[in-house]
Image 1 (cartoon, rainbow, N blue to C red):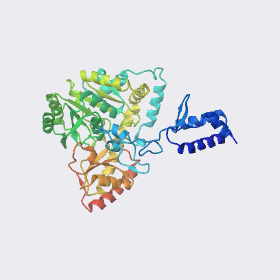
Image 2: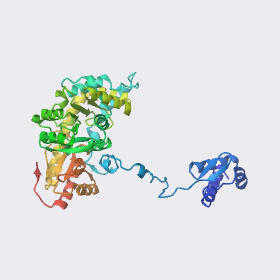
Image 3: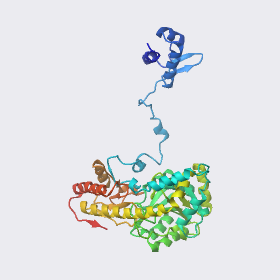
Length: 474
């Protein structure tokens, strides 16, 4: 009999013996097991070590080997983790709160929920070339400065405009991590934070994870309403507003020209910060993109956030925050607490990418592709689901915001069953939703044909739920 087979026989025999003994019972000595099973001392030692690693026995040098205490409760083959429910109670982040943010939809689904560009829209060749050039730099793998590489900070400063300088820039690992950092740096746990209603669900999750209490401020066709914002600051005592002035997610709204200075003035009068999330700076559909609020704010009221992730690729996790005054020192300190610095090769690759003519060509092609996709999906949904109201034809961004006669969660569930991924509108509200909405995206699908097919399937669901109606595009 081979050494392997004698080892397996010994382990099986000991497991059967252990099953019939109470916890704490002593097993035969190694010498007895060697003699009884006709195996070598090395085989016995290996078997005991395996059983100890599995938690079946406990070895005590000088005393012997004993049956280990058995797990109780709802233990599974992987162990009993029920104790964690007590430790993790009363936490602000749960699986359900981030469920819509976790991973891609099923492989065979038409993706109308994703917030990133489909691979066919990404500048993959330019990215590969940029990363290759960055990797060849002699200092490419050295530690990066805490604030980020100087050339990259200069690029972000130029992007913001106004009198923003490289010294006002802190490079971040994309947008979501920067949101979390900003919330924790600016507002104390338990504080209220004002948000547009509706707003980006990832911001709501990050705020709650920081121990903050999101308070919604209504919007209209020109964005957040200044009068209601002033009332919200006064009644809540909040000292932070999170907003998306350009191509708002999910509605596509652009903050009206007459409101831009009003919003900053209201926040300044309240002694509050504005966290300006400019995620869609490079996601316009060919028209003018409004100037960031931070460009006209010399007093440090606005903390600005943007990134290259959305217009490039999900794994180019490079973004920036722009701030002036003590809040920037707080943000830099938070960077040291969180992760010291952003990986240098990725920063170098971002500099290489954005500094080439290929980047501008990509942005022009992307604007045309997004415009075409948006028009295709809008036309298809107007035809297939005439009872649904497309609230606006966005001039930028990645999504349509659609008002339903009712039942957004039910429609989203039915769509998933039909192989279409969309987001129910209630995920985007900090409090009760004022109606039923869907966010339907046009950037993550494979092509125009897949967008049309997704709209066709949604039309079947709409007809089943709403009955015949008339197309409405607001």
